[in-house]
Image (cartoon, rainbow, N blue to C red; front, side, top):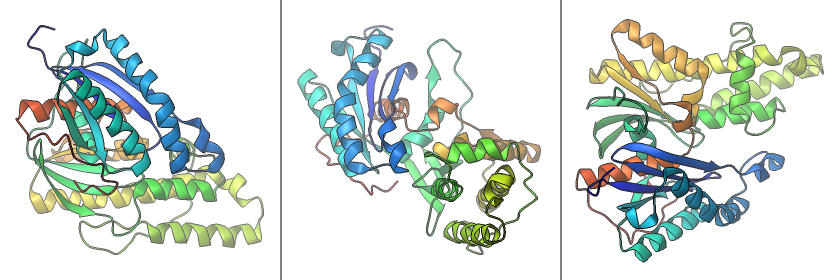
Length: 342
């Protein structure tokens, strides 16, 4: 690190995780995340409770990130923060703190699109490691989370085109809703993945939606799983507990197959042979395994570290870093937008 280094503080507060990260010249020095346990008893994120928890967590989390990075606030070049999409109350906490903090230091604050951050997480380097292999432009990115399922054509750092997306529900929501049907605790998606690894994916089959080449739909799958369970439970009240692993394996196989069908269609349509995944569902073992199989078809595949799959501030900081590096316009007065588009 020297006087000409670019040091970015990133702040992420789009949902229920409060996170702060410090990146110096593209390398992560610290990435701190405070989870909110309060939502588990409600089976999902309660927006009002989330925003209150962010207010409690944000100062300690930022302080911890600066200390771990061994950076004084006067050394910061800019503060990057999530501007949307997300829960409006949560976004307001992070953006208000970030803009005030930056103003007090007389440095820029940079509004970041959360989904851009997920994609650009592939450009993060670790402080004690050699620079990793990164996607080259243009590449395709399958962004899959509880709120989004999209195929994005990434032309450069800040020119991205959504070429396919869900017409109803997101893949992550489908995982979580099925988990709720199976009476699994929140968050259920990772538990479905864990149980699926012990099950037979071919024991129970579920339908695939008949939608466009690059469109996704998961509402029909959720309905079919619900009716299937109701029918089986009527005949055997212990059906779920006796078949839990196999049900999870069948549902996961179906969701992964839907995602892979669409990304393979996108490869054929665009001719682009580099594919990345991003978002919380990119941590799913079934999706990771299926994507790696594309390498047998001479497709370059990029899978993020588990720590950069879920919401984190390192992805916000790296996006802020490239904002400065590529001279993107800064809009510090921008208000948070819960439905911000990519």
